[in-house]
Image 1 (cartoon, helix red, strand yellow):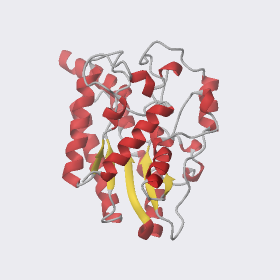
Image 2 (cartoon, helix red, strand yellow):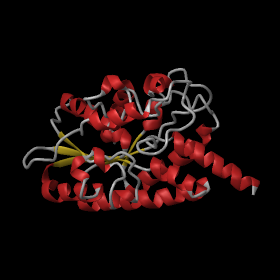
Image 3 (spheres, helix red, strand yellow):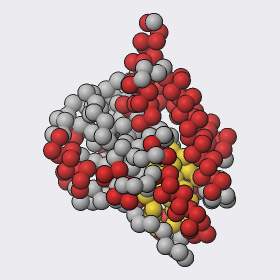
Image 4 (cartoon, rainbow, N blue to C red):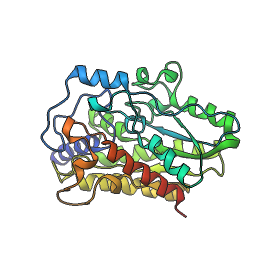
Length: 288
């Protein structure tokens, strides 16, 4: 029983520490550094005033697809960022253009998305109008089917909300990681079958609680080892979102709050953090 309680506790730490678990879920009681928690009004305003990034693909124009949750959506509670979207998927577009790839973005990411709701209805679909009556899966697959000839890359960043959900069900971390691998394998292989020959980039997870609780680092390592192994097994490219945000793998990270929005008590990236994720996504796409 004691071992199971420890496993539950560490699962909870890892789940909160992963990328995007704060969309519509309760705010974590701990933050990367002491900071005021945004008021419910500020959070609601942020959710309402962050525009969706990118547009549906157009025949004859090269495009890339971003599938994900609140980080890929561009969620933030920073009032200075309301009315703009600084998601890594959107910041990737000018980086691609600088290398001669003038690709447009179709970002289907949805706040609070899990790998199961990806197939049904996203919990945060109110912030993504085109998902009001469809799933992220169906929107993505329809776009691929209609515009496959122009598709240049697919990016997948899902899974952190799955771990938070398993915490609520008191599932030990090893079982949660096994379930997540199975779910991600299904998503990745289906996308590869729908768009054969198109590079698929799978993202791992960063740790916004590295300074507050260094014990989270080994837990994130376990998850990210699984993601790397899955990428190898499926032939996907691996985007190292962990190294993009976390400058150290053990001990205190002096640069963490440059990349995570500690100032607003939020585990989502700052603009600079999103830019680092964009560069990690580009590096993964170009990796041989």
